[in-house]
Length: 307
Image 1 (spheres, helix red, strand yellow):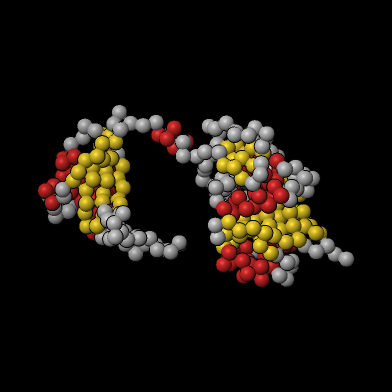
Image 2: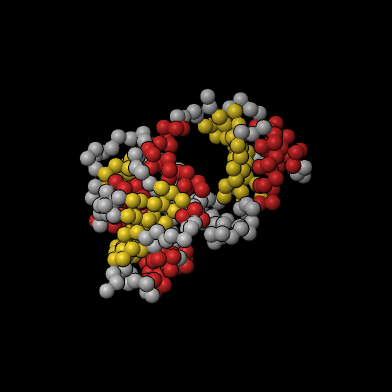
């Protein structure tokens, strides 16, 4: 089976209404692109993270409607114009057609994710691949909704720290666990007890799934569940790969979970933010840059044992 894309260039104020109308008229899917993409006139649409874009489309927008290959493109556009009540005719909206041939989309998507080699002996291997080194520390992990497949520099930094400082027979807390990848590494490196905490229920679900797949016994909690009760759990190693802002705020809490002479590992910190994060933790322990990759750093330090 094959499909046809109908490509229409429109003004910004027509893009949204035409897109909605094309869907209502029977298009299989509709997307809006920058018609000037790849040229000197290309413009970013979205602003800073967390801010709504000022405009709903580009000044010159390209509306792309996916249809069955036998569809009448002109008739579909005419119906969409009527639905949207636009003061236009089909002649006012010249369009081009692009053929989309059938592909094995699952295989195509899977081909984009190969095993990832981290540190000396760690491999993150998607389920559809064989492990390149069967004797390595193998994490079977598919790309998913929760953060953490080992591809981001901050995740790699934490994994490398754990490999260098193997937590055999120790207790480990992974705060902000995402997919559970750091908890999995700690467990496979011999940690006696591993707990993961995350604010996202989807992350907890993903982490539990990954732990079962990798035959690792790890408990995961939402923050309210983890902090419930009067007993404060303390760990030999606390690792948190989040962002500098939350890490700064959580300094007293994370340090309170450190056992005597416990080690703290932080990432999600840009090199330019390292001094501020180090200062936030100075009342509790001395942190320093353990390693840097692509502008990100991992900070580590050890709580001084009493006496």
